[in-house]
Every structure is written in structure tokens, then in C-alpha cells.
Length: 560
Image (cartoon, rainbow, N blue to C red; front, side, top):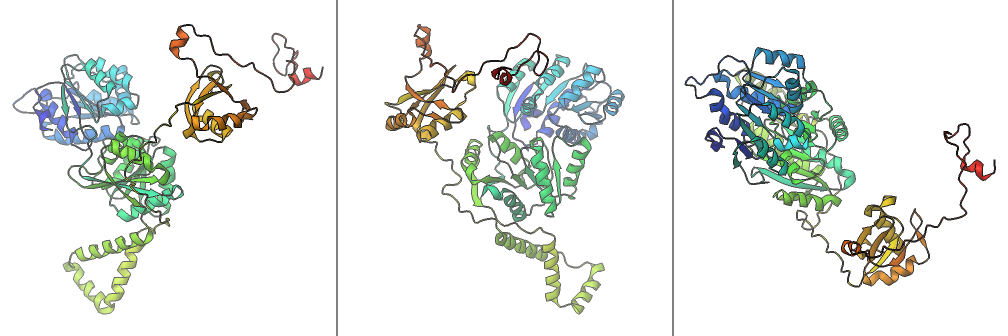
């Protein structure tokens, strides 16, 4: 990202791959603007903020603050953070003392501006980090408020993994002749990340996660789930199995989230189970394994989650835990992300045991010779205990430190597991026959529950059904020519489904053009009540159910 340093004071719109070092890059890019070309290259006394960095999450904001504090340490920069979940009074006092650079989340920054504790009149640069994520989280209104409150004569730098239409619109509104920089091609996969797809039976998904963690035996790993409840459940399961694990989700307090991240950084915990709140911007050192316990819903999520590993030239592994029925969906997400995954079964106990023993042997061979203070006791051990017993004790000790693997079935790999299955072609509807049933928009009809009624009524599959047109009072659908006669015979004179609807042959629905030209409306079948209709209960104005003057329908029918 050396081009950022030579941007000559321009506004920037940058799409950058996660883990590409953009925090340091934009720190260097705004340095000439903040320092004003001073020969001393030092900041003056802290007064009003010169730069404002906006990040989507608390963790990312605090991480950016740490990195910029390190970058500007020799220049004497004073930093301040304003993030949700922290003591706002403490932040206000920090701002009153003065700061050169303020880093914060959109909601908290807006609160400080509204209360008058954050003065933006001296700003020279505004940086939006992970701008697309902030819009996804619903911060557009806050961002527009903050940018509108900032001085017009300022630099605005936007960093985003992708540049969808909302980001482009934001850039056009709040940037001036921005220089567009693409640090990497859109959705370009990390070359340092090895993607693997672990296929498993649906009922064995959690066992597959446990065995995957044991198989790779990573020093630091993160496991992604969709929901907070899934995070809590999986964290408890892994903790009970003997893993050192912490969790990270939106329901935790800032202190709890900070402690969880610190435990990962200092090695007290080796596994972090998280929602996608941790998928952006967080840099956990030595993280070499990402496990997708829940399949990513889109390629951007896959890349951002996986981008927690393989950073700064290090190698990493991204493993998708895929139930067999979701194999095609996983392959489509991988294809759209331009990622190629190796398909494999969930590791079994024997496979994990072989890798564990090989790892123990390699660690023993790589151990340093006895130091001076240890040599005497080592000699005493060798004199009193046979080497075989020492080796056995060491082996048992190492195996006891690792949880036992779970049982998984030997699921056979389907052919071409990593390639998406082609979508089935729509059936040929030449010569098809239209039918109708008396349920429409007024009855809140939807194809997802209309289709089963159609198929069950005539003993056909969805491949025999063509278009389904839901009208105001009815639904019309077409059946393939090959099955139309059979279908007509099956539905004749019979009511179907829980709604007890009658299906009958009909013509196709009128097109919009035909309706505009005054085509006669489709004939509607009269509503027929099944059985004898009961009279409605007399109702007096002001009467309420169960109150004076109110008669239930049942009492009215009895003549009471």
C-alpha cells in the first residue's frame, strides 16, 4: 500500500483485502496532513482532535488505537478512544484533556458530538475503516451525522473490503475527487490460506468440530457460529471436553470481550468461539486455524472470517464444517469467493491418534539439551528409572493434556465434492395445462406452502410444476403436458390439503397487457360454506365479549 503514502493529500476510496496492513497504511497516509510538513515531525500540544478514525466494532476500534499509538509514539501523538460499552465520563475527561487522534465507533462518537464533548472543528482527516461493515450494521445515519459535523475542508479516507452501491453513494456525497485504489482484486482469496471442506453427517456436526480442532492441534484457533446461543452452546461443549476456550459475541460486556481477547493473545486460551462480530479487523497473533461451525451465508463473510488467519505472510487453514445436505451450498459460496477447497471426511480417532503421536515425537526430538541446572537431576532420573519407563510417562502425560476424539461415522465422500452441482433445468412446459385453487393474496398464499398442496393433491413432484401465479382471490399454476391428464383425474371432485381446497382446470392468468386493454376479469368461483351456516350473534353497540348485552354465536344459535 505504498501508493497511499504518495496520495498527495487526496481523498481516498480503498478496497483492501483484510489482513493487508491497512491500519498502518492509512496511518502513514494521513501523517503529512496531521503534521503539516513540520521539520520536527512532532505533534504540538493536544487540543482539538486533528484526525478521527471510525470503526464498526469496539474491538476493532481499540485495536486501531493500539496500532496508531505505536506508529505515532515517536511523534508524540496523544490518542483517545470513544467506544460503546466503556465509561462515557472517563472518555469525556480524556477529550477535555486534549487528543490529536480520536478512534471510536459511530454511535458513541455521535453521542459525544451531540453532548458537546467532542469538538470536530479542528479536524484535518477522517478515516472510515471497514465502511461496508458499518453500513451493514445500520450505522449509515450515524456516519452521515458525523461527516456532516466535520469541517468541509478535510481529507476523507474510506476503506472497505468491497465497494457496493451504498459505499459508492457515500463516497460521492462526502468525498471530493477521491482517488480510487484497489489493493486486491474483488473477492481475491488469500494465497496463504488453505481451504478445506469437512463433510459430515448432520447429527455429527459438533463431533466433527471437536475432531477437527484435535486433528490440527492449533496453538490458536477461532470457531465461527451464526448466533449468540450457538456460541454459548459450543463454548460449553468444548469446555466440558477439556479445551481451553473463550467466547466472543455481542451480548458480552466490553470488559468480558477484552478479557477474552487478552486470554487468546497471552496463550491462556487456545480457542475462541465467536459470532461474526469478530470477523472484521481483529488481529489475533499466531492464529493459524479458522473453523466455520456454521456455513457462511455469502462469499464476503467467508473471506472476512477466513482472513483472521494467513495474515502478514503467515500460513493459515480455513475449515468449513459442512453437513452432507449443504454440500452444494458450500461449493457455491466457495466458487463465488474464488476459493478452492479440498473435500475430506471428518477426522476419525485413529487419524487423530497418528498425528498426535507424530507431533509428540517431533516435539521430543526438537527439545533442547539439559541446561546446567537440570543436568544433575536428569542423570539421576536416568540412573534410577529405565528409559522405557521415562518415555512411557512422558507419552501418558502428553496424551492426558489432549481431549479424547469423538466417534464419527466413516462418511463416504461424494464424487466431485468440492464442485458445485449444476442447477436442474426447468421442465419443458410446452402444451402444459393450467389449474387453479381458491387461495390468493387475500388469504396470504405463498409458493412455499402452496407448492406442497399442489404436489400432494395429484401425486406429482415439483419438477412437474411450472409457473405459479398468485392472484388476489386464487392461485393459478401449470402442470407439464406429460402429467396434466393424470393430475386432472387425481384432483377431480376432491378437496385437498389442510385448507380443504378444490383444484380444477382453468386457463392461464391474463397478462398485464391484456388487463390494461380491458380484458374481462377472470371468473371467480362463488364461496360455498361447508355445512349449514350458523347465524351471527346479535351485537349491541358498546357491548364487549363476555359483557352485558353480548351474546355468543353458540348461545344465539340455541335461541338463548
